[in-house]
Length: 195
Length: 301
Image (cartoon, rainbow over all chains, first blue to last red; front, top):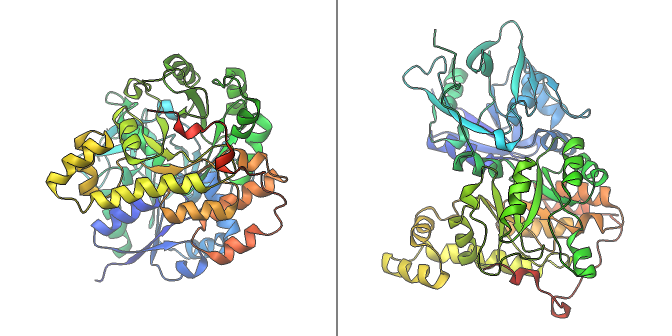
């Protein structure tokens, strides 16, 4: 099967790092800034960045509704950090005007691990990636506080606090796989699209 | 089933990856200078990715003269309470104690900044000694690499703060990125000469020759006053912009802030730039560089 064409939401954040990771896997990528870019992709990566800024730019660039429609009919999506917040069904400690897509049934708390001084890296065991732990970088990271039925928890820290979840073809992580050379989570997302 | 009990024993904070990582997350965004919680709220409402807390914006520092220092911790904490985006603050060049205070306040980034009056005329802060990341200004590649070798996790081209004149920002960006382009075509023997001329560590010069980029993100500051200015510096290769006096010295700060956020995100789209540049009122009053008594960008060694 031909590899899918994957978009990276390119309004703000670590867009270049995701594009680089996908290109290393040989995947064709499209930077998505407007609705016409979205029409050309089979799946979308929502990168790390400032979720409150990205939320505003989605509305300003008239991308929120078209993206919500694609997600509602099952477009595969991979959200890291701010991207996870955008895909969640509920945001805790968000701004009042902050929007999310509800593409995965989880409640996410922004900045749940503290300020930058508390940002950390660690090794995580991730279900489905049994050969070795994933080195995970958490930057002012959000955490998952509630998981709905049908959502798989793929990894957790501290007393089972989930930091990687999947529901159907929507994959989310609190941390930033794009900051490490390990491409296995990007691969997991692409393999999930083929399934 | 895999063991989900992770990350309790082997957590590492304050690492290079974690410190540089936050700068990666700010790419494509606008970091706005604010002097009180009300301005911080306006900045966040407009879509800023972070705010820089300081006592006076650079144009006022320029006008008032005297010694410009780190802000009052109470003001910084007041800003931290009202916004959910990262809060940065400035320490004087070489002022280790101010930086320690800012780290104790848990600011998200420390700017060792030439906009404040330098505390040390020879030495910058040893930034490796801190868990909070630092951003530093640079006018050329050698200065940028010296700051990186001292532990800076983000570089911003300096420009000339408080002037509303983008010409120096353009000069510094072109100098840094132009030299990077030249280094990528240099042979091994020439790299030694580059390191010597730049007064920069050879391993960093060799790394640039290999990767074609700085090892940390590079943003732009100093003189950005309009959405078009933001687009210009992004097109020249800046990865995000700092706007100082340009927002709160304009006639309609909220409107100007939103327009610069939109222009930075859509810097390659002239239709959007035309739309957001309309009806913004007056930009901040600008200054001719030749008329300046103090060149802030000359501070730093």
